[in-house]
Image 1 (cartoon, one colour):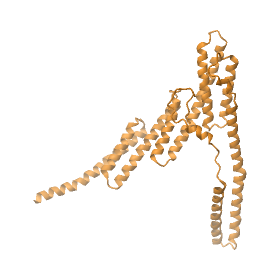
Image 2 (cartoon, rainbow, N blue to C red):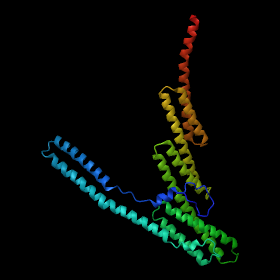
Image 3 (cartoon, one colour):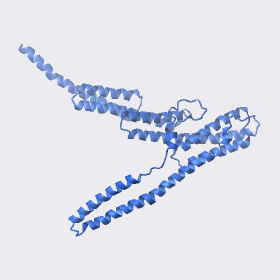
Length: 336
C-alpha cells in the first residue's frame, strides 16, 4: 500500500510501505473451495428435503419423500451448475483481466525512463515517456479497484516530473523543447494527481472497512490509523485537496468514536453494576478523548451533551444515596 512515492524520494513518512503491495502480489479472485462449497450445498439440500417432506406430509401427500427428493436433487444440480459453469467463468475472467494488467504494467518500455540522468532529454524521448505513461495509465484502469496499478502509474509520473523539472531548469527560452516539456508536465501532473487520489481512495476505504470489521478496539484503531497515514502521505503532494482533507477529518472522527464508544460502554456497565463513581470516571475519559481530537461538528457536540447529562444523572443518584445515611447518623446523635 505505501511504498515510497519514488524509489529515490526522501519522504520517510510512508511507514506502512508493505501493506498494499504485498496484498496485490498475493491477490487472487475469491473462489470458494470445492469441499466447503459442496458440504454447504448438501446441508442446504438435506434441510430442504426434510422441510419439504414435513410440509407435504402435513398437506396429505401420499409420497412426500419422492417430491421432496426431486426438489433436493434440483438444488444439488443447480449448485453444481452455478459453481462449475457460472462462477468458474467469472473467476477465469477475473484472473485473465489480472494477468492482462500485470503484463501491461510490466512490459511497457520502462527502459525509456530507467536512465535517471541522461545528458539531455530529446523531443523524441520526451514524447516516448509521455506515451508510455499514458499506456500504463490505461492499463491501470483495466482493474480500477486494484490499488497497485494506480500506484505504479503514480511512481512513474513522479519520476518523470523530477526529470522534467531538471530539464526545464536548463532549457533555453527559444528552444523547441520548452513547449514539449511544458505540455508533458501538464499531462503527467494530471495523471499523477488522478492515480494518487485513486490509490488513496481504494487503500483508505479498504483499511477503514477492515477497521469496522475488526473485533478488538486495538485492531480497529490500528487499521483506522493506517488509513489515516495513507491520506497523510497523499496530502504531502496535494495539501489543499478537499477530498483528502474531508476524508482525513472523517477518519479522525471515526478513531475518536471508537475510543469514546469504548469508554461509554465501560461507563454503562459500571452504572449497571451500581459502581456510579467508576461510571462517572469512564464518562470523563470519553469526554477527554472527544475533546482531544479537536473535532468540531454537531454530532460530536450532541454526544458530549449526552455524556454530560449522564454524568449529571449519576451524580444525582449518588447524592440521593448519601442523604439517607446522613439522616440516620444525625438521628442517632439526637437520641444520645
